[in-house]
Length: 400
Ligand SMILES: Cc1cc2nc3c(=O)[nH]c(=O)nc-3n(C[C@H](O)[C@H](O)[C@H](O)COP(=O)(O)O)c2cc1C
Image (cartoon, rainbow, N blue to C red):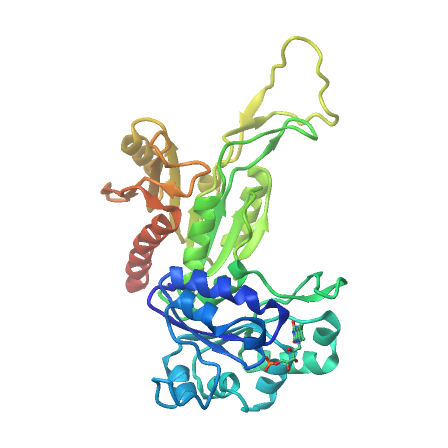
């Protein structure tokens, strides 16, 4: 979604200005053309040279810079932008944008652009909560500016409050989401499950599996970046919730079933990337089981079959983690669960499966055609899966 896009990164005179260097760096690494526009005060905090070195592009900080290669710099940048992100944004710049003041190159450029504008405020909590700042923020929100943060937390002054700059991942997540608006999945609702479930033996012990949730999270982010409304139903994981995605936390297979049931009504696609426990203890001990005797026998029962139980008119995508007979076993699962697609991963392959960032998968369609992909980053696998889902959606909506 980001590759080849032009992001104008506005940097203002906040103590958090140095963090914009990381944003510029990560965007550049994702293949974005990053043009940095700084206020004069921002240059007191970070040198334009840092941004120039990171982005490999010239940095604009002076509207009247006679040496600029661009013809009327602020207008040229305004036209080139796919999105403008002001990160960090000071109270001052927010106030100027809310009232249309155009006394620096950043504010002029924002006035002149038709691109969406993302604002990540960073300031002292009293400055942010001051009614005048709040009025300015709500004015800008009404005009369609997209805000990310600020967050509650420890501020430079040493006190805790609402004013902390959002982190790089969140800001880039919102930029991707804004770029994805009107994308190929616009107006589509996709429900994704992720992570392993946990089935309680007693209040402290669970039966679970090694799923990290990375594949499901990558799918949720990729669907968001194509403009979809995404509901992510997630088992316990160590991953950060993706921004722009509704995340529902569950623990057991039963809770996941209930969450999928309520999320799926009216949805277009269900992607079951979660590793749902197949069995759970027949009873959950009320108290912690004591270490007595040489062994312990647990009686297990089947957990609900989520794909089997959830009926409706939506595209059904399943995952199969297999250690042998990959295609045969996955195809059998596809038929048994009446899926439109199944993504089979060979958990014995090096660098593939649980916990790692990469996956080697074979995608099998209803017609039995199997496409084996090389070892790819889970984000790339997510895109390949969604390319197939996009085709299924197109066919489905053509029929209607
Ligand atoms: C050390 C220091 C840190 C500052 N941090 C912030 C900040 O995080 N947010 C903010 O709104 N203003 C902050 N200010 C005040 C702004 O720099 C000041 O309002 C300035 O006029 C903003 O200019 P600009 O909006 O054109 O970049 C800070 C000032 C100093 C001296």
